[in-house]
Length: 454
Image 1 (tube, rainbow, N blue to C red):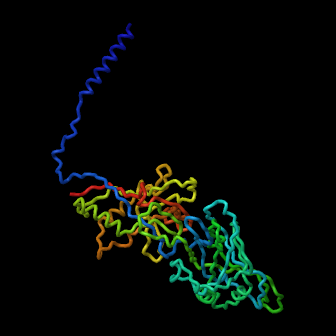
Image 2 (tube, rainbow, N blue to C red):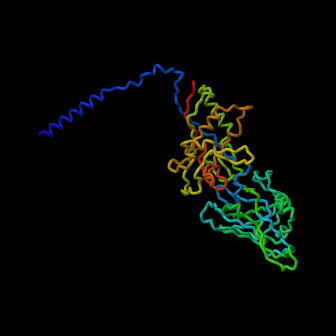
Image 3 (cartoon, rainbow, N blue to C red):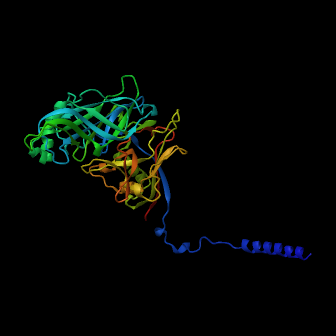
C-alpha cells in the first residue's frame, strides 16, 4: 500500500510540474523597439541561371611542363585528341671526353612511364607507334606556353631507325639513326661547357604518336617522367688522352630537356565553341573544350538584378554564393572517366598562362566541386568572386577578363618538402564527361545569400 501511495504522489507532482512550466511564456519582442531600423540586416536569397557556353582553354599551354605527354585518343562524342612533346637536347650532366673517330653501335631515346590514361580499359595495352623528329628551333619562352608546334618548327624526316611500338609498359625506348648520334658526339669543348651554345646548335626533339586507325575509336595518353628522359649513345672510339691505347667501348647519356618541356595537344572539339544555349555541355580534359562563363554576360546579369531591385551595388553584402552544375547519368551508367572534381577556374595573367581554381577553393566548408552522384551535380562556393564581380566597375562598358571562368577538372597537389597543399587545374588527365546546359530542365545555377547594408 505504501508503494502505491508513493507512486500516486510522484504522478501528481509530475502533473503539477508540467502545469507550472507550461504556463511560462517567452516575449520574443523584448527590446526590439530599442534597435534602430537602419541598423538591422535582412538576409535574402536570389537564384540565377548561369550564362554558360563552350570554349577551348585558348591556344595556351594546357599541360604540365614537367611531364612528357604523348598519345592519342578518339571517341564518338569528342573525336580525336592528340598529344605530343618537344624538348631541347642538352649535353651530359658531367663533362665527358668523347675521344676520336666514334663508331656508333646503338642510340636510343628513353623515358620511364609515370601513368597512362584511357577512356576504355580495354585500351590499356594497345600498340602505339612513336615517331621522333628533330626540331628546327630552340624551345624557349617564345614557344613554351603557346601549345603549338608548326610544320616549320621541326624536320619532317623521322629520326627513327625503325618502327617503335609501345604497349603501355613501364618505359619507352625509341632507337634512332646512328648519324644523329655521330653529330651529337661532334660537340666542341665550348659547346659542352655551355648549355646555351649546345642547345643553339643541336636544338631538340619532337615526339609524336600515331592516332587510331581510321574508323576505329580508342587510344591511350601516356605520361613519362621528365627527369628520366635521356638519349643513350653506345659507341666505340679511339682514346686521345694517352698514346698507344686500343679502341674502347663506352656509353654516354645526353639529357632531354633543360628544365621544362613543351607539351602540345590538338582536339577535334575546337569547332564546338559556342555561346548558344545548349541542353548538354561536354567537359574535356587537358586543354580541350570546357564549359565557359563569359564575365561580361554574368556581370550584366548581376547588374540588371540589382537595378530591378533598386539596390546600391556598393552596399550588397554576399554571405554565400554557391554554384551547382547538374548532370544526368549516362545510359551505360559508366562515369569512371568523369572528373572527380570540377570547379570554376581562371587563366593567370603571369607568363605561365596556367589555369587555377578561383581563390574561393581555399574557403572553409567549400565542397570543392566534388562530384555528387546522389544529387547528380557538381557543387562549389565562389562567394568572394561574386562579391568582387558585383562591386567591379566596368571600364568602357567592359569588366576585366580576369573574371572569365572555365569549368575544369582540378587536382590536389602536395609539396613533398613543405607538406603544403594546393589545388590546380588538372593539366594532365584527359577526362571526358557532360553536364547539363542552360537549356536543360536541370540547368546550371548560381544561388546567393545576401544582405543590403543601409
